Image (cartoon, rainbow, N blue to C red):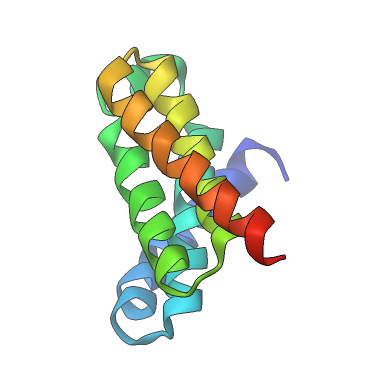
Length: 114
């Protein structure tokens, strides 16, 4: 898609995000949050991520919470794994450890049920 396409896609997602988060079912909200975080990671430079990691971590944690509420353990684990990687990248060790513990819980639930 290229850089221009990435920016266009992110702009479209951001424009629709308030509607999605306000009125959509929980699964759509969770997927939108995860997609937003993935898009932010794909388009952010290392310096931008280091300057404001919460911009990516907040939607990842929101997605994980929504997926957990839906008992979609694998998707919750995927969101938490990505959050742990971001925390590791920006050297937030304590937060990484907490997020990694959540990842382990979700992974164990996924293995137990499926």
